[in-house]
Image (cartoon, rainbow, N blue to C red; front, side, top):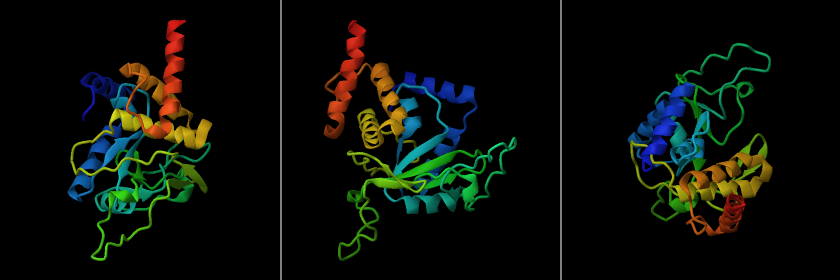
Length: 245
């Protein structure tokens, strides 16, 4: 992982002390994707931990060129297909049994997510996020026609549009059996973009950016995407104005 070693140690301590199995599940998924020739990026809360803000998260977000191919590869190797994590129903003291490998999790047991798989052993969910069609994945045929329509920049979650905002997700191109954590500037850009797309519904993304700026002592002129640069600078200005008061 291309992150600061001290930050990785902090993240490891958090996962161990909280009894989290997300790293075990993430590494299993990454190995399977590599065996299938599928590149990836790790984003979301796990990437936030690795970049200096050790806050709790219970799932893993992976950016892949094609969610369908990635889900198929994972489900052929022990993961269960579903739209979200298996959770106990309201008022139940005992959680439901873990799904069997290759099974589909009943809708009554899930919170819908953007194309997910679940590790039956750890019960950790992995959300698969699509990179744009400009990644040219899957490969074009002899006539140059792609087999899938372009990604619109929106996902469907719980019957509504989940707006990723003005910044497209970065395109993973390197196949690796080691975790490839999204670079900090890209992580901040995608989080600010999601916040711009959904506002208060994505308050955690805003909070993540604040903590990442502080943890990494980032400058005002930082390499975030131009679509969210003004928002980044506004946050930076507010943080630094408070420091000088």
